[in-house]
Amino acid sequence: METKQRNTFSGSIGFVLAAAGSAVGLGNIWRFPYLAARGGGGLFLAVYLILALTFGYAMLTTEVGIGRKTKQSPLTAYGEMKKGWGWLGVIASIVPFMIMPYYCVIGGWVLKYFIVYATGHGADAAQDGFFTGFITSQYEPIIMLVIFLLVCAVIIYMGVESGIEKFSKVIMPVLLILVIGIAIYSLTIHHKDADGTIRTGLQGFKTYIVPSLEGITFQKFCMIVMDAMGQLFYSLSVAMGIMVAYGSYVKDDANLVKSINQIEIFDTAVAFLAGVMIIPAVFAFNGPEGMSAGPSLMFVSLPKIFAEMGAVGNVIGALFFAMVLFAAVTSAMSILEAIVSGLIDKFKMSRHGSTVLETVVALVLAIIVCLGYNILYFEVKLPNGSIAQILDIMDYISNNVLMPVVAIASCILIGWVLKPQTIIDEAQKNGEKMRRRGLYVVMIKFVSPVLLLILLLISLGILKF
Image (cartoon, rainbow, N blue to C red; front, side, top):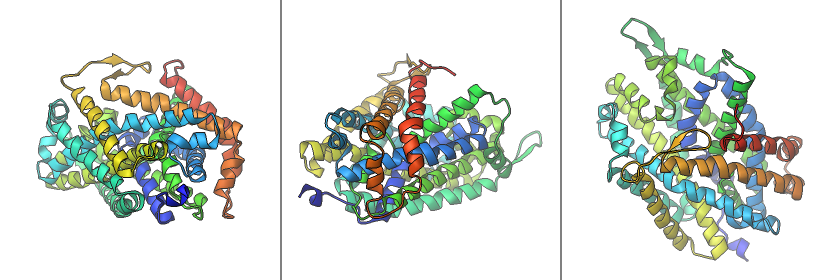
């Protein structure tokens, strides 16, 4: 009876767009271009693509399969799969609970930049100290995060088909058009330095897609592999309960194999296009060294580039931050849904009540994250060597520690305790053929757990390359 009453996506298209919306987020747009530039351009791309089709595929198939088989949220699904494994559901649910507050803070930053460009004040964003001045101010970041969080909460409050699916069906095509449009424009850019040097977007594109083996050692190659694998967590929304929750809303007669393939293609294409949007433009204006800006690229480096474009820069900036905002909302709402679905299934709460409860909790924690840049500011050194504030600590614990733990435990549960055939049967239950079943078995039993353990040891500072 409970299964029949459960919310579902109306069809495969709704599921694919919602899952792709979750996958296409700040990770694709913020981190991917920077890691690609740092990892030798085309070399990183090749490694990422291979991992997406192997490691990413195995993890995505596992989580969606667990969700549809149990028709349960991440909090309760693992215990349903195997008695005594409920603890894994708890950890899997802690991940989105920790990510939601700081993701909304960053979403608020994106909203601020979109407003700045949409109102024609893009030149302000290019000024030195603009970003630091904004995030360290006491009230404005909180106002922006509240708006961002409320938008996500309203969508989740409306339900799976009426909220998540409807919103995704409208926003995802718009997001894709914006990504393609900005990427094409980025390739047409020409810039002349004061010394007469001319650089073009196409030259930047070449540095992006052509593998650079200069200075590559085995050690550096291993780091590129780990960077690409860490990026896949962000990109595919695995090991954070989201795909289990979304999988639980997929109808039994849907073609799971086909849907997973489509999510892979959509996500990898957008990640690649994010690089095409950003790397050629940064190369044209700042040269190869411009990509060393790292995570500050989106909020510090790009506004300066938009300013150098002249009047058209304000338009491109507005379109760019609109696209980033759409991507951030589709991801944040999926993170919120992973938590809400757990409250519904475990504690039998209503969707409305659980959405309101988690929104309030996320708001309180998000305000603390904001205050971490002013009145609650402190610095601490993390095991991986980076210097962190509140936001960085939450990001490190959720992404660098808990997500690999969830993924390793999932591999053990499906690969060794229940056996891979459990998920293969779920994927093929309507007569579909899982063409990569052999690959799936090898990945989930052997390759993925080893790679994940190495990633976890690096994150904990135990293993160093």
